[in-house]
Image 1 (cartoon, rainbow, N blue to C red):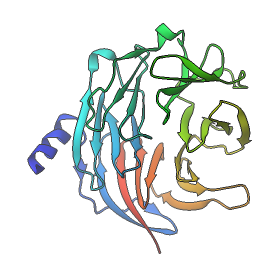
Image 2 (cartoon, rainbow, N blue to C red; image 1 turned 45 degrees about the vertical axis):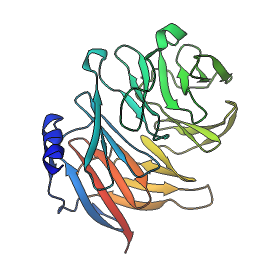
Image 3 (cartoon, rainbow, N blue to C red; image 1 turned 120 degrees about the vertical axis):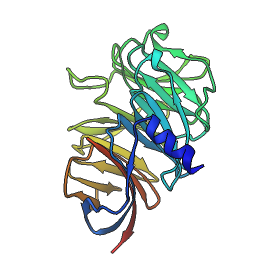
Length: 273
C-alpha cells in the first residue's frame, strides 16, 4: 500500500516532504502532518475528514493521515476548475474549458453523465456548488441570478437579479451550501447569504479573498492569517498566521486543516496552547 501511495504521488506530481517544518505562528499549536511541495489548483474537505487536492488536471482523495486513496482525471475535457465535497458521496467537479459539470462517487468514479451547462443556457457560470437535496447551485453570469438545478436539469428555484460587481471572472466568486443556507463570496467585498429558496437573507461585510464553512462557523482565509467567524458579536478566532508565503485556500475538519499556498499544500493538526 505504501508503494502504491508513493507511486500515486510521483505520478500526479504531489511529492510530500517530511512533516517536521513549522510554517506558522498562532494561538494554536500546529503539528504538520504532511506537506505537498507542488502547487495545487484547488482543495476541499468533506464531512468524513477526507481531503481533496487538484494538481495538473488530476483530483486525488486523501485520508486524515494524508495518504492517497483514489484519483480521477479526464484531460481531454479540460482542467478541473472547481470541486465541492460538501456531500462525500457526490463530489462535484467543474471544468471551465468546456463548461462541463459532473458528479463523482466516494471512490471518485463518475456517478452520472456529464452535464453540459451550455445546453442549459448557462454559458457564463460565475460560481457552482453542490446541493445536498440533489443537483447543484449556479450563479448564472448572463442573468445574474442564483439558480438551483436538479438532476433532471430542471430549475427548481431562482433568485431575483443579484447586485454583483462588474468585471469579475468566474473563478473569483465562491459558492457553498451549508445547512439551510447558501453563501456566495464576492472576494474583497462581502458574503451574501440566501435561504434554500434563493431569497437573499443578509450581507456579511467580510472582505476576504477566500472562505469556507465549518459547522456553524465561517473559515476566513486572509493572505497571511486564517480565522474562524461565528457571528457579528463574536470576535474572529485566529487559527494560524503565516511566517512565509501567502494563504490561498483552507479547509477545516474538527482539528485538521488543509491549507493551499502558491507552491505547497500543508495538512495540519491544531490544538490549543
